[in-house]
Length: 450
Image 1: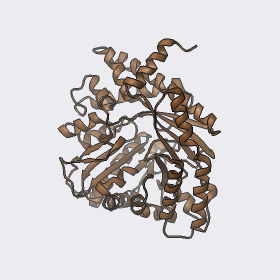
Image 2: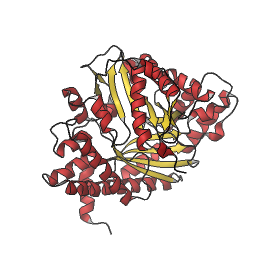
Image 3: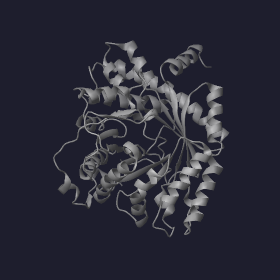
Image 4: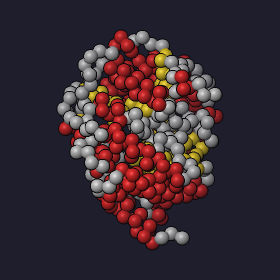
């Protein structure tokens, strides 16, 4: 039986502590949409997405209204388009992106992910065509998101793809206002197939025909819970976060099962990720500061983040047998008001963020850098982050925005959940010769586990 105190506590979390379902994402397989004729393939893609996801938004709104639980975003993820477009006899993959965009607009969702390629061990012709089309595809669509997986613990790091992605990011920034297209482009190592969060969501080849994945977020709830244990030991802090994460995940499980039933679509996973927003009181950085740090980024930040990430996972897996995706704490600079403040103060820099990514979910996320940053520097940043993921058998990623015409100390406004980004400095010393070597950084020895 549900305890009355739990009901009131949940209401308080929603109304006062920014608790929400960040996204309900429907994954859709497009493998049966392949065709030599590009127009036919794009038509099949549009029809299938609309057929499966046509009621997604309305269903989520009904659940939101009936249960009183905010569902911030409704999204779609699809099979990596490089796999779907491969049989088509065309050099231009932009029509596939436009088909995704039209279908997503027809369904009324906020974003669609899956303009993607998996190139951790090498690039097919289709992979390379898709990657080279990204700048134009993201500049000519509104809500399409793109992701490229350049490394894995099993395969190592494809440095040819890393070098190419540095140039693609620069081209994408140049083609879109304030480099906004780069906010819809992420480069992964060890990408997962069931991630519901953008920009990195895609429907993996190992997934079912269609599936419902839910992403839950509650930094504000965790922050408020820690205010009740000021001065207590880290043992108490960890237990408090675990209990809070359990309650958050149970709410996500409820919404996921209800959406699954109403849409007649299998339930996939609940992704328990503390994904912040620019709203005050909904910040991962402020959680770390509540543990005793004066400013996020000072010494001790990595240890505090490690505790937070681990406790969130432990609490989540007790609440659902289907926790998956990325599940942990995100540190996107532009989307977290505490991170923004720390970056502006100079305490939080890219080097410290890189260290923090060793112990949290994903990686260097929503970081704005000067527009004149070299493509090779961006590639080297990607390589560093991929190395962390490869060696530690975890998902890491880079979503970086070289803002045309902007320099260190300036700010760009991205709007909505994307927030605002202070332009952060990068090292001026060259990485060009390193990046241009090409080839593949071999997988670490722990990859041989078979």
